[in-house]
Image (cartoon, rainbow, N blue to C red; front, top):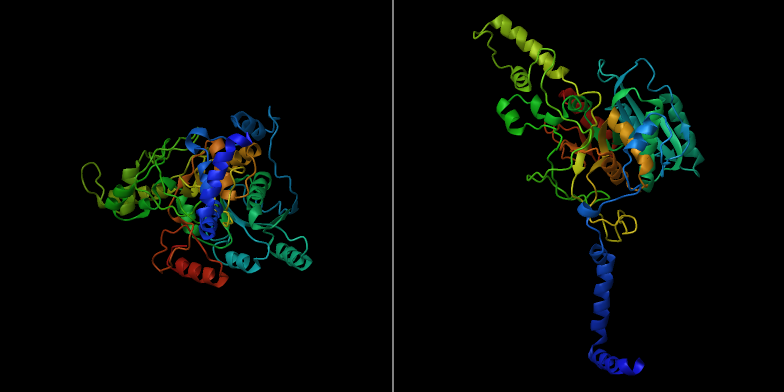
Length: 456
């Protein structure tokens, strides 16, 4: 064999002897740089659209339904978050009311005492609207070696009775555990709310806009606007095949550099994904009539204008505009959605993902974890489907994987700002959330100003 290869080896040696050492170093330097930035990893990625599968590989709906009925599933769960609650607050959702409208679940770092105080003094106020029963809780982990901080947290929990703590290490890469322990607490201790909102502790939140959004997500905020022309131009509906498409965004585990793409592409419908058609209430009034009522346009009665009748009808229709409710069985998973986002393959990124962790070239559609809203049905299905979804260290990606398995199509709303939206006094009218408020004083100041304007 050596005799056969000897001429070729000698030829290669002669060629290499003519190459300057600097070129050799440059060549290998380029190879190393390409490897570092993940260029070669991309060559071995698997196409997402045609080949996606993620453990547990198979239909999980029967298992999920069995778990929801407290029955033993045919296949045992592959992933359970069996951490213990140190601080439970079991009475938090049972006081005063039987049914809650909304529960805020704030994912907070244990050491962020000032941020939690700012939230309690701004958008986390539970008595913000007297007719909208709301609760606010904070989910934290532990710092096992910091007894002083643990003592401060215990004192805070004793005073405010809104701290949920589980025995996992509170760190960035444990955010999935924090999210799932929040879900676990809700299922066990707070199943009596219609909606749940998960929020990071550095978010601005407009409680008013959240409550308005969950009444009619499909048409928010256009159904609030005075101009009928604007409403007609921008009307949106959530149908069984929702149309959305976004470029990739570079701000999270998954390339958060996406912007809205005007070319909509049809995505797979969910088995029980909701359809919102503002069709009728008790009077049988359709959405166009509601729009007219909301705009205060003159109404005709029996072909004639009657001031008294018009005023009465207008008031009735205005009430019905805001009486619109989503059905109880709706599966709403809403926030800022990334549809075609790719894993980070460059090794210097804190969001680097190897092929062994995730071999596909795209993520499933997912909602940024900074702020998202779940209906009760979506929460239950996501929670129990997670039992059959292999753990992933980035919480928004993990919930995207779970949602795909549960056949829940995430619903996109651009008024969930995953970045810090530039603040102007009149520019936050329809903002639901904005990221980047890590200064507690700034959060309180902005929220108070927007509250005075009627926007918070």
